[in-house]
Length: 94
Image (cartoon, rainbow, N blue to C red; front, top):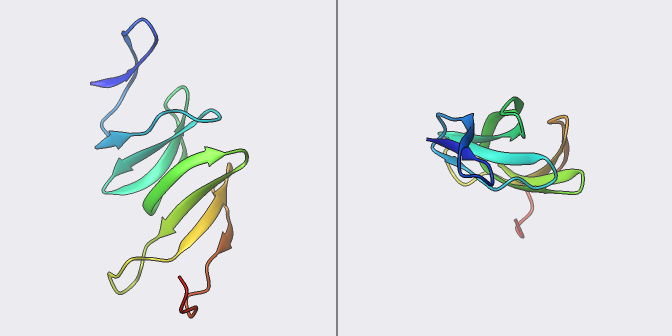
């Protein structure tokens, strides 16, 4: 199992539960929690999110872990893995 190139041969071996399509050189990966890899398979953002969407430009939407086990709030990470914006945990609209 792994990520296959256009010739259908594996180019990146993987042990993840799921791997999204690559967008802008990054793919979301899941192994209990979500993170991101680059096109050579290096982990560039450590898995720590409940859910991770694809990168659109310089940002990806992620769902942060909730300390009480409920669905976490949403935010955006940049390509360095820094959280650049997160929804207000006290907002009734989240």
